[in-house]
Length: 84
Image (cartoon, rainbow, N blue to C red; front, side):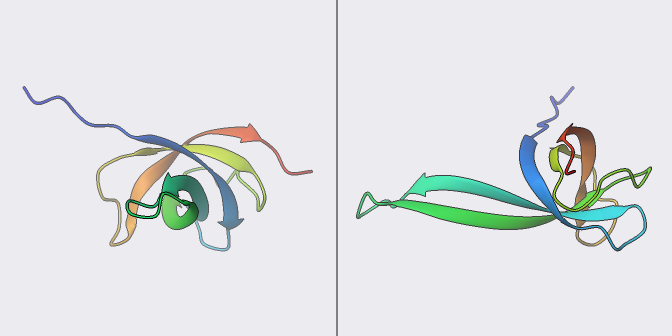
């Protein structure tokens, strides 16, 4: 049997206008391979939110899953911090 590679990331919800879907911005800090300077990179991921519970500004934890739609292959694991 193959072992599944499940990734877990943290990010902030930036869009929630779709039904059962949100867009999460994941920020990471990486070092440039030649110059050594640290660079901030941002990735937008489409995430499946079955119950439509997350709002804009929430800090959420997401995990990888099988492809649900053309661009959606992540699902909401839990909400770490609610935006007030």
